[in-house]
Length: 278
Image (cartoon, rainbow, N blue to C red; front, side, top):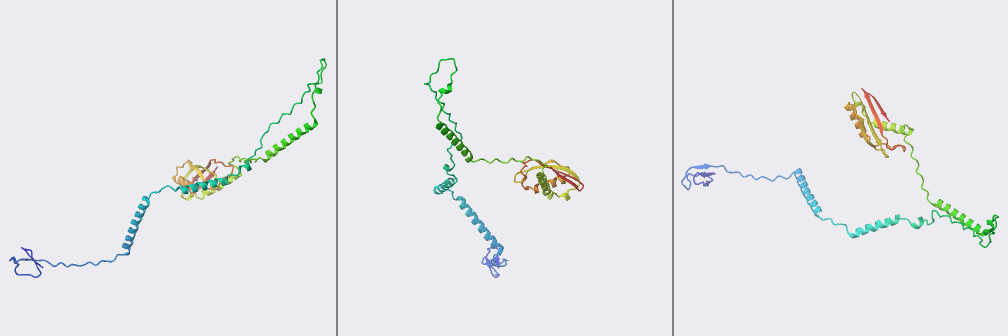
């Protein structure tokens, strides 16, 4: 393509003179327009598009869910739960008539009636002693028998009431803690064996001595673990610490044990070791 230098008109072929009378031209190569063909998307691109679309959908759904106001539970459900709770409570309450006992624990004994004194008998005005027993009316035999029967019946009823009352069983006395008893020595030896299985002796170089203490709760959990004496040998301290952390729980202790402190001492001299527990 040719372009005139003065008027900038374009010609496909070179002309001797332009319409403006100029005979000088600039030559420009024709631009070749290449149409780029669209390449199909790869699997990675497709998966990336799908993941982006799925991610945007999740964000939209989460925004919608959080924007929904959460109201209080309806009154019907609350009433239903209250009625269920009441029915459960009523089921567990026993009949009070079966438990209640109206019989008194203690009844004071009635005072026996004092015999009446025969006022009509005259008292003689003499210096001699008077037999006052004659002036007392003797009670009939029937009345004394009925009084004795009533007293016996009351005593029998009191005994039955005492026997019918539920007796609270006495709790067995807990044995006194003895650190040197057979059960405690056996338990401590088993505990030392469990701890020693996690004690890496081969990783310790040199010599040193350290001590630890801990307690055991009712379920067998090791609590209050700490060093009472640390060694200058860091390797020994690290292995003992790793051992304590590796055995957090053991079997429950004997009944006589009540959380007393258990102590362990570790002594190593160039491969020789001594572990004591007390």
